[in-house]
Amino acid sequence: MGNNNRNETIEGLVTCNNGNRYQVLLDDGRTVTAAAKGNLRLRGVRTTSPVAVGDRVTVTDADASVAFISAISPRRNYIIRRASNLSKESHILASNVDCVLLVATLTQPVTSTTFIDRFLATAEAYGVPAILVINKSDLLCEAEDQELLEAVCHLYRTVGYQVIVTSVKAGSGLDELREAVKGKIVLLSGNSGVGKSSLINALVPDAELRTAVISDAHRTGMHTTTFSRMYDLPDGGRLIDTPGVKGFGTIDFDRHEVAHFFPEIFAASARCRFGDCTHTGEPGCAVMADIEAQLIAPSRYASYLSVLSDTDPASAGKYR
Image 1 (cartoon, one colour):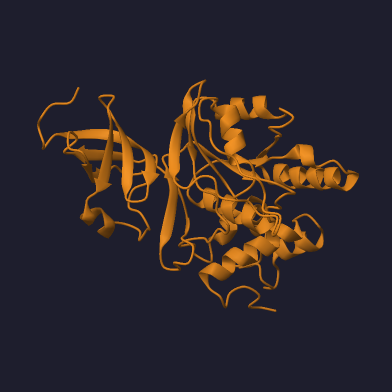
Image 2 (tube, rainbow, N blue to C red; image 1 turned 135 degrees about the vertical axis):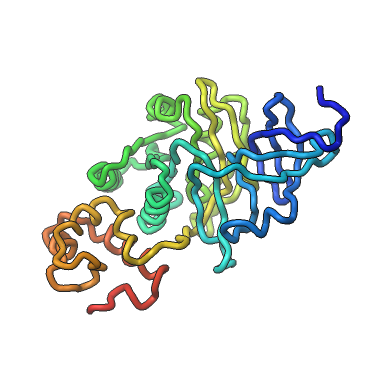
């Protein structure tokens, strides 16, 4: 039970972001609705929302109908992307997470390797371990579908990522997924339509999230989650669900550091002739040599160039 002190200050955890209102689980066990004080919008990176699910915050006026978030504790990490249609603003998907589950599908809809690689590179840049979840494996019935699945799994496992293949319909891969998230604070993200809601319903039985069919017109997903929300996992830990995203624009990458976020390219770069090699045609580039030798996948290099172009449009292909 709260007290009647309107100036009460208490710490808490942001568990839901619904536009300009947040649900905060206070350290005394209460959950309150809170708004962010205006000055929070002036601090740090320019974002569409100053507060993210996963933030530790200070709340004042906790007994009011709408409390106020007056401060955000330093984040140990976060996942951020360029906000859609707002080229100068960014969107923090979640903060203070132990890992991120990137859910992708190889059909109905197809998740592009560019999207996967941009997301994984951002996770590398912001210090968040990532697991790739290939969902809807029950739809991959033909021999060529299975070959594609094996190739994608081999590619990302070779790079160094854990890959879990799942099917909610068939019940496959779910035990491995539960073990991977047990006791952790986990962000679940991906394109719309890849089955995130079905996975959450399997991981959190009382979530009862609504699922949607794929659009026949464009074979793309329909949004079923409209705001970010945190769920308690039955075996310990918490899972953060976010709205599906179509594209993944990178933020604030230095063009000379982009290679650091592609593990296989970074490993090869140690053998380049020049320390500031951008791997776009410089002489003595070990990355280009490994691509020619098929030791680095062309799709990964194409994604690297895509991220590089975000930092400096003139940099990609500069030496060609």
